[in-house]
Image: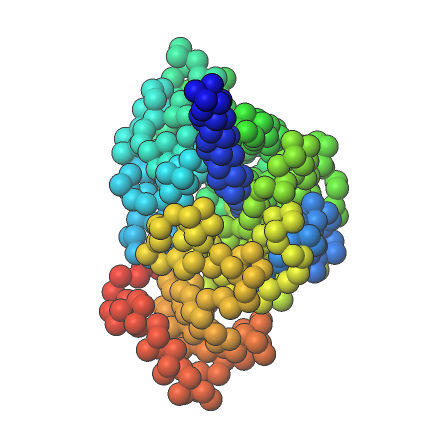
Length: 514
């Protein structure tokens, strides 16, 4: 009898262990990997799935054709740093006076005590990584690039980071891995300034004969790899990047992060450089389009996306990985260099049917490609629901069972997964600190001083002496101003706008153009 009892006790113990193990595995399986693929300056009309025919984007199109394509997906802003701030914090960037286009020496924009997307996911057991463009500031504003740099991505929730500090057209032109400049020679220390050049360092302004790509405006500083940048840099010769290899470099690091973390839930923020200037495709992609370097680097980016998807597929991760694809803002052709983007555009419409582009309050500045893909979980289709990148923190928190919700982001999880088509009712759009309101089918832009067109980039900014009111359902190109005709609707929009922004919103807004 004692023997039988002992056997039963052992069996019961083994069963309990098995149940606990099984329960743990199920819990782990319920946590999908999350990959955000974030392009830079990619327009609504630059992707095949959105109607583009001149540029072939088969891998992005595959995500759209097998996932959910949003026709009303928005970045928070028409410029880079503010959109990235909103994506990671779920907070409108206009709430932070420092959330504007940052120089390469800017201090960390996100407060280290602030709730962020990677912090939330870490609390749920995720390994988190960022690869690519950062542009959210580093350190305290007085960086010694020859020592460990902090605070940075780690202090806002990323376990791993392989980044460039700002943009490809700004110094410092080096990669930073987990807070340390890669390949830095201690005998050739880095110095960076945005005020004055260092003696003996050639600039594009003084030595145009050294350039392989001529600057157009604002990019006449230190020459690196035959391209002059914004700002001045000395030293770090061995650490400087080669633009032609940038896409490959970031892809290798992204794939490595996936491979090293494939056995646990991971979050990868893959922040691509393309098609931001300077546009310097790898020789493998030169001439892939008839549109010059801008078209070629979009093809290059699409290839990189395909390679990352292949890695996920080969490792059997696609059916447990949610992929979100988007862009930080709308498109721009000439953004500082003579690279044939304008001359060879040949009728291509980077913003598609939308008006404006990067820097603009019109929808071309903020309505961007927005695709969600999750094999076996998201039914292929299209959604007209309005969603914003500011919603990602709250939505992904709901996905992983976190109670965290952000200040401005809504829980749009069912919409992102295609289970609901009821998106946002209203959204604040921003362009260089100016703001407008999208509510339902209507768009209202308050009066703003300043030029109607940024002549340097040849993009309409949305500035006007009068209120602008558009019905986007009937007038996606924002051509017919109904402010005079629809005075009651304008009044409703103004009240809704002021409820969010406050009646004295203009006192906090300044026209800041690049």
